[in-house]
Image 1: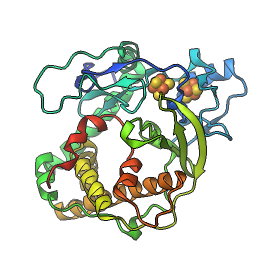
Image 2: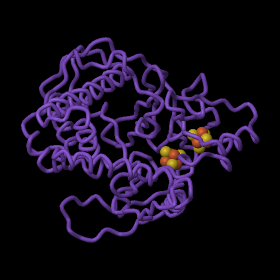
Image 3: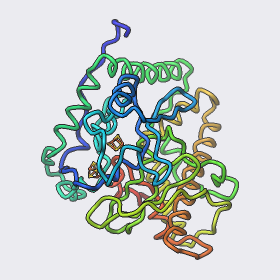
Image 4: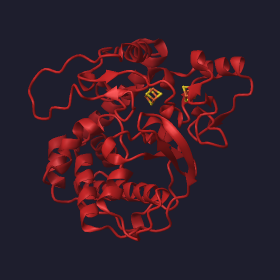
Length: 356
Ligand code: SF4
Ligand code: SF4
C-alpha cells in the first residue's frame, strides 16, 4: 500500500436510516449469485469443501461457481449456506454495500425480503429518520473491511482514479458540473430501438451484486430475474420471502417487442430516474476522456440511456414470457416487472416521474 495515501474512513450511512433488517430463515434469495472471493477466502473454502469450484473473468476476478442445475451458488442447500462460517465477504455483509466513489456511502439492497422500509416510507417528510435497526453486524463487517489494509488499498485506488479523472478534465477545461449535464439532457430521453436491443449481450458474471434482481415488492408479483452467464435466470419467489422454485436460464430475446403507450411512459420515467443517479455522471466523465467534446459526450450519454432502456425491455420480456405471457407487445406492468431493483432504487422511486 502507498503509505502517503490517507483516506477518510467515515462512511455516509444516510441511506441506511429508517431501515430495519432481519434475515429470513430458509430464504436463500441472495444466494442466486456467484459471489466474488479473494485468495484467502478461496483457500478457506477449498479447505473446508475441497470439491469447491470457481470461475474467473477476463479481469482476473474469481467467483464461486453456480451449481449446474438450479442456478444458485453451489453451497446453497435447502435454502441454507453449507459453508456459512467461511462464506466470502459479499455474503457476510449482504444486504449492505459500501460504494467507493468521491466519498464512501453505504446502502442496502432493498429488495432483500429481510429489509423493511416502513421507517422510511414517508416521502416528502422532513422528520429525522431513526437509525438503522438490525444491520449493525453486516455494516460493522463492511466498515471493518474498509479499514483493513486491503480494503483501504482498494478504496484509496478507486478514489485516486476518480480524482485523477477530475483533475485531468479540469486541466483541459472539460469538467462539466453534474447539474449542467443534467440540464443539457432535459427533454432528451430516447427510447431504445431494435439496434440497441441486447440480443448478444446477456448479463456478465462481473456485474456482481448489481446483477442480483431481488425484486421483493408486493406490486411486482412472484417472479424475479437473476443475472447468469449466457442469459437471465428466473426464480419464483414465495410470498413470505425466499425462493420457491428456480425456473431456469432463459436466452435473451431475439428482437425488441413493440411497447404499448403506458409501457413507453414507464420506460421513459425509469430512464429519467437514471439521469438522477450518480452512476450516469460517472459514465459521463469517463466518456469525456475518450471523446473530449461536450456534444459528443451528450450523444454518448443518450446512446447509453437507450442501452439501459433496451436491457430493461429485454428483462421484462424474459420475465413476462416466464410467466406465460404471450402478448407480442410489452405492457406497463411487464416493464415495471423487468426493471431491476438494487441499492437505493426504492428510496428514489418517487422521483421516477420527474418531468424532464
Ligand atoms: S435475501 Fe435477505 S432475507 Fe433472504 S437470505 Fe439473503 S439476507 Fe436473508
Ligand atoms: S457462499 Fe453461502 S451465503 Fe454465499 S452465496 Fe453461496 S450459499 Fe449463499
